[in-house]
Length: 265
Length: 241
Ligand SMILES: Nc1ncnc2c1ncn2[C@@H]1O[C@H](COP(=O)(O)OP(=O)(O)OP(=O)(O)O)[C@@H](O)[C@H]1O
Ligand SMILES: [Mg+2]
Image 1 (cartoon, helix red, strand yellow):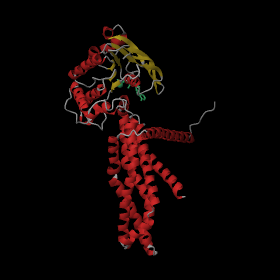
Image 2 (image 1 turned 45 degrees about the vertical axis):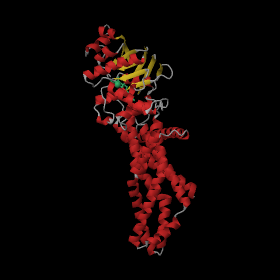
Image 3 (image 1 turned 135 degrees about the horizontal axis):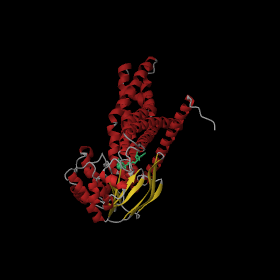
Image 4 (image 1 turned 180 degrees about the vertical axis):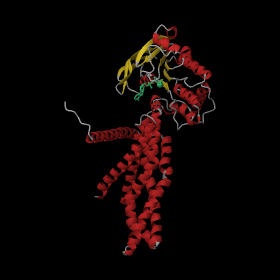
């Protein structure tokens, strides 16, 4: 037998192996839960009361943060674009460009980030704390499927209401951009609105809504799954929450890439 | 319903927490499970209730038996108030959904709360209750569906002596009313004397004593003697893990 020398490379390798294992574990649990959730949705076994509670969290509670983030982002974009475009004689394109950038990419991604930080993290931590205090075990013993009761309504709420968040925050964002262009480049609001229409395509809006629905469902599924598989104590609740946030960010980036490749390549 | 456990083995991190545990609980019988902290009592209940899978052996009971468990740390749903916690299985369980009217459920919840001496706290949330109160609500939730197999994990731990007696009497009463098979994990001799028929004692994963309460108290078995007399010296060494 040869002896493994415990060098730095060895420990680095171990660390890498552990990361890969964790990656596969998380992927596995999200996959399994996705399958189960899909089954309940197809059978139309969705608890109305829970769905309403979770939808309120998604659409209403998260609105202040989504509005601020998307509003700020569009304001900043307009601040950068409008004076430069005006200088180069393209002021009339400010609205068009803002609409394209916001609807196609930024509004969905930014409101996704807002939802992850606001809703995803709280899904993960509350389900994780239920797991470590045996509430999920208790639910199983009471013969109520925790997937049906806890995860299905959250995923459906995310899927249905993320597009709503997207529409509201994008509208708000484009209004912000209009005012900022007006102040920074002395663009008339009427001009901005006219130019805005040129950049708004129904196709883009539909794609963005579909994308936000997928984002919403994905965030809810990943966050709930990370919470659901937590075991141990309070520390694990924190770890599960971190994991949920990191994985949701990653998933959104991947989805965004997939959507861009399918629809805009 | 008769509950039977056969050659149960459970391994955590390469350590045998349960090693070949077997017993049978007949209808209308209560088995007490005693043993040091960490001897695997809660693990045993979790395997019987199906929360954990055993690494060996099996749990046998008639199909479709209704199993209930009162958890050691209550495990109340913290996002539901006391009323919704107790009503939870009646409202959410697939086979019971729609079986009871709203008025009936209110009636049943009220009755169970009264039984554990806590009427009038329906609107409170678990975080607003003391540990002992949570425990009693957990007890009420467990038995609300009139189960045939009931598992209690330290039902009287942390309760005052009078409330303990109340709970012990209910364990006996319920067992009779429902003709249920019960398993009670407890450290308290008072609970054993009052509510239990037979006793099994676990030590380092093994069953070191099995017999009636009288046999336990008689102290012919050296493990039983050490437990009952609460002696530090004896076959069981608390320092060795
Ligand atoms: N999920 C788990 N993973 C790893 N080890 C565990 C797990 N659950 C329990 N154990 C270990 O199994 C042993 C038995 O635990 P268990 O909770 O069954 O003890 P207990 O007899 O109920 O103790 P207590 O009287 O303190 O409640 C302990 O050593 C514990 O560390
Ligand atoms: Mg225990």
